[in-house]
Structures are given as structure tokens and as C-alpha cells.
Image (cartoon, rainbow, N blue to C red; front, side, top):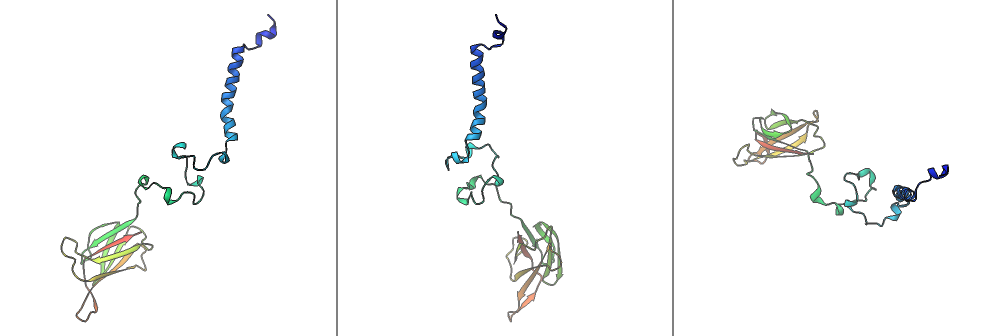
Length: 177
């Protein structure tokens, strides 16, 4: 047997090596040849992508609209809402996100929250802290000029002439951000 013949692979080994090179090179060939231009629009669906592989940086601006979002798959939206139920004496009966409450004068209150509320919406109404009727009067709200976390509330009733009179009244305050 000649020395050259000793290093030549058998026909079976040659076929196996060719199959191996074709199998290994096929994926690389597909990655080079198959591009976005080869994919028909609308042919790929969510199941064609690995979970969490697509995110905002990989999508074109305005390419996904509300009509294609399946609302049942969305989680709850965390809106920031603070509330305060305050007695006529200026004592917090219950609330969320409230740091302090103080009555500054007759019918005038300052409610301080645990964050800046200047860019939020304030709504207040005269109302009992318990289950009694709402009573009479109105409540008005304003941002506090000094404290960004505070809301000023004014409660009034009206005299026989129809003029507002500052009066200590329980109220409900809602702050939505």
C-alpha cells in the first residue's frame, strides 16, 4: 500500500464531510441571502419572533397603531392619584399620598402631598367624612404659591344675600396626575 493512499479518506467519509459542510454553511448562506426585502409584508406574526426580542428601538416610528394592539394583553395603567378626606377642623380622616393637613383660617386649608402636584388636576367637594349627607356649601382649589407639594382648599357657604362666607366644612379632595 502506498503512502499516499493511507491519507485519503474513504468514500463514506468524503460524503459525510460534504454533508457536514453543506449543513453548517446553509444557515450562514440564508443569513446573507434572505433579507427584509425577501419577506412579504404581513407574512410574519408574533409567533415568528422570540419572546421579548422586539422592543421600541427596533420598530419604525408610527409603525404600530392602536388598531393592532390587543388591549386584553395590556397590563393596568398606573395613574397617579392622591386623595384626602378632611374634617372641618382640618384633620385628615383618610387619604392617599398625604403628608399633612392644616387649617390656616376659617374655611381655608392647606393639604400637603408627598410629591410635586403643580402639574396635576385638583377637584374638591364639600362632603361628610362618614356616611351622613353631603351638607351645603362649595369647595374651591388652587395651587400653593410657596409649596409645590401643596394644594389650597377653600370651603364656603352662602348667606341670605347670596355672598360666600368662609366656613369650616369637611371636604373630599382628589389630585390626579
